[in-house]
Image (tube, rainbow, N blue to C red; front, side, top):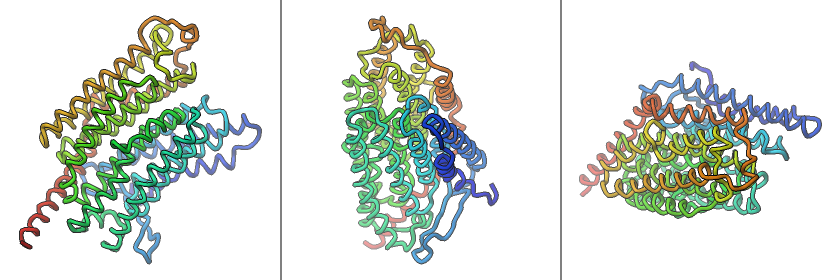
Length: 506
């Protein structure tokens, strides 16, 4: 990309769009809403195009960070504005930019009040998400990481569809903030030790065994909430149920990936000795998440809650595979996060389609939709099969790689996590049977119309990506392979060096 600051453009273009909405949206309510919608849509589409340019310009054969931009921010404190991507982060930048125009289209007709403020909130949210995945300074990362909370809090609290939306917004805010305070303490401790917040420098810093354990636990408190891992997962079902459809898309599609990305960027590479010691803790919590939340999903009568609990189970797969510390397990975890970002977003959009028509998410209120909504039934089926991991869909590749890595690392963990495949297929197929098949017994269900052209335009790109990832996974795996291999090699090298030092001291 030469000297072109492509990452800054991708990160801050949504803020420019938000500013344009505030400047251009004038007149009566209808004119303001129309201007806000179109500016937001075109801004997110251009941002996505730029993110694809980042992906195309990325060289997957090179180890380390690319497209770096670095400027002095607080020079006296050795804190800089430092941006860059590697094979792990570049795909999450593209995922964040890909989902945002879909969110704008999904909100086109369902959001009627304060449309200008709604679109501005989403554009600010996009800047925070892309900035977090691109940041190479810990302070900058922390600003973006925490900045995501503000627009999401506003989106759920103001445009949420339930009576408990304020409660859900505050619960999300407090859970995340509490964990992030501990991460801030870890950041300060690392700064005192290393004299810098530059992430590449911190990756090469030895923090000592006992300090690593405390730093790892402090970071874990923040990242585990974001994943979310059991037992700090309870904010997620409430947030999903109360959030507008587009809010659920971003929650499931991107925000849940922030915790997993934090483990990959900080906990594992910076704190290898603590990671080796505490991996059984992650295994245990991941197993509980997979099995327990799958069983809870089976008991749900609300479609959104069922998919929310399924997200927790899928992220249990991700954390287990990640801490297998094998090439297949780690690549599978990253691939599964990308797959889940698309599939779960599409499933929440499927719920949003029927909710917009009948204004209820109760599973028992539906049935027989295949008769009067055949297009909807096809898209719903594709996404459901992607969720349960049918071959030729994105979910299969991620789950297969994760289980391959887990069985290499620990057979018992792999076996217990694999039970989630059966449970996941059970609750998803039950949901599909109850909603799509059977006889139509209610007149309001009989009158429901099939997908509109706008809704088809939303589901087609999601379907293409799910099938593309399932049929041609190497186009994604090749991007991350070198970075994952370098991470694992460096992890084992650091562990070996620490063991040699310990023996020498004795």
